[in-house]
Image (cartoon, rainbow, N blue to C red; front, side):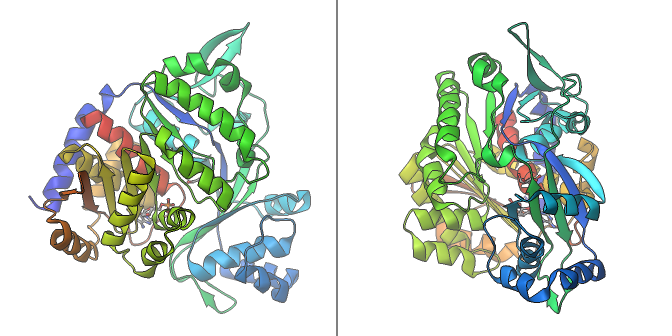
Length: 453
Ligand code: AMP
Ligand code: GLC
């Protein structure tokens, strides 16, 4: 079958069965994304006012956190110059105030858990229980209609309500997302690829604040769910990670007693101690999702420097190096499913198999194309329309390499007792925005797979 035919049949299958998926737990990071599409003249003017020399210094080496405007603009420039995403915590109140006055073009649901809640619950109709560290009026309003629930404790009794009905009046956790298109020019630099820089003016998510409802009633919450997706551990530091990780481990134990498969969305984790701790915990998860930078960073802490370099050396990323890295990670941790995504293709390594793993990846690629094209996926019809987006032509070479090395056919192969699934993805040439595409891919593939299995 051609890839087009495989795409349509996978979509039909997943659409027909996604209604069978039981409740999914989504924890922990939910916030408000204030998205600003950068304008060159405006940005250049602001950099000049702040001082070009200092800003340039931070665009070579990212600061650890933002305490000045030089850090803010240095961070934005760091991302633009490389076409790479970065995210820093904004500590200074005066910088937070500056960002607020600078403004935004759109307010959107943010955070892996929040974005996945709107997609799974609001678009696919899969019931979800989501953790939002702070439920402000605005945060509540950003949740779509649908079977989306947060726990609420009244008179010591746990109930589940839609986040809007929670009627929270808590703080706003705002992440300022500075998006730029490919070719964006500032101070003589040109962005090689579309991407974004994020400044998080948020005292809850970066520290993995866990609400009392989740701390005190997790046993009961765990009884209500059939699948779990965990994220938001990426901003922890060696100073603050221990207590937070202990609580996460307790949650994982409760879920594992009930055999709930849990996926970890492995966002870029700059602190090496925390990254190591996450790799050590991977055996408690069923599945993990990561991109090439994240997989390379995991190889780094596993002492596989050469492999890590190989993962970042070519575009598109060498699929043989990716497979080797995934095998090493699976062997070291015992994790049953690894889902790798990069610009142009996805690979999944699983210790079980069949075409349903590949088909779930195809469904995810359609959802990702819809997200890239529209910024927000409003309905399953938006996902169908992404069928018109062409398959990335560069993925042909990737498929050829996999065929030669592993005898792959129609996106499936057996490698060292593992199943390897491959799909060439649909790429939107001029995406509306880039934030949240990774979350769309990972949650659609994970939940899609359970719908089919
Ligand atoms: P992350 O790196 O986790 O934010 O996820 C980004 C992923 O989104 C990449 O690995 C690609 O697979 C996908 N992606 C990025 N840009 C596009 C685009 N223009 N069209 C479709 N998918 C995209
Ligand atoms: C990170 C950011 C959040 C954004 C999300 C998208 O969690 O903190 O602002 O919405 O990534 O994946």
